[in-house]
Amino acid sequence: MNLTNDNLPDKLFNSMHSTPIFDLHTHLFPPTHKGYYLLGLKNLLNYHYLIAELLTATNIEPSIFYSYNNDKKASLVWNELFVKRTPVSEACAGVLTILKQLNIEINNKSFALICDEYDQKINSDKNILELSNVSSLVMTNNPFDLDEWSLFNNNDWNKKIYLSSLRLDDLILDYQESLKKVNDQTTDSSENNIIDYLEKCYLQSNPVYAAVSLNSDSFNIFLQTSTWKKIFIWLQSKNLPLTLMLGVNRGINKSFGLAGDGIGSINLKELSDLCNIYPKNKFLVTCLSFNDQHELVVLGRKHPNLRIFGFWWFMNQPSIIKQILKMRIDMLGFSFIPQHSDARVSDQLIYKWIHFKKILYPVLLEYYQDLIDKNFPISETIIERDMHNLFCANAKDFLGIK
Image (tube, rainbow, N blue to C red; front, side):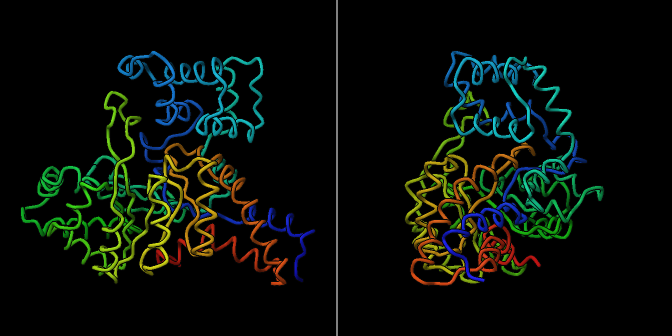
């Protein structure tokens, strides 16, 4: 049965909120990977988005803040950003959204009491996956960090929920150190050993893509070195897409630590060149700067081996998402991957997807209503198909996941 403008809103809302989500890019780990699995209110508050906001809003010295234990840091963030100030930023709003979803009232409660109540309601990743409706997600796995990579020495985690990726940033940031780590594990010290090592990691982890973060300076290295040419050939042989996260500038305020990264420049003409040089390779791309979004969408229309995904980091702001989302739909239809959580703390899955759906819903409603007004039939089946594609199939089809 075809929908009308009267029953469309409810059908769209219900389908959007019942469709399972495949989260293309996160920094999450399964609970059994101790030291890397992050959960709970204190970890939420100690996230680098909130730390950056705290350090710029107060006179607290970064070195003093980082000297505190996690409990004291979280308490300080709560007091400064949620008690002394009105928590209107996106990062603060995310914490409040999670508290609301858990039915935790904060009126006249101490921070310790709020934490206790929170811990009683969230005690596993299962709670979070159910609340966020995320059915599976992709981790970020660094094969040059042997402690982190030790995850793949074990089989005590659900590989159908937690899919792996190969994060290759270390080959850009410090190639010689990465090569040394590889050579320490083998007897061969040749450059070809990088490919042998990646092959070993591939067989061990079964990644769904490789990934790297770049700015203009690192993109030049990326395009011109013999090692990366070999990596592109290897990726093609595995039919393994490469995720490009473009436009980051590391450590613009080094005293802020992880919270000190900013936006760097990127020349998207080089991205176009890359798609042409390696037409059989597949590239998932997201850009950090607002200024690059229009050109990126145009490239998405011209290169079938390029797929745009998500709103990364500084782009993940409601005022920005709505504008860019509509631009992508206007030029690409639904042939892109609308969002990823980029979550580092498991609980963030809850608010990241709630906030995005709140923006996506009225945008899609407008497009569907316009189609109905133009006498194009919209059925519940079409809505369900589109939601499945946007939240799951667009990503999985591009990655070649069954």
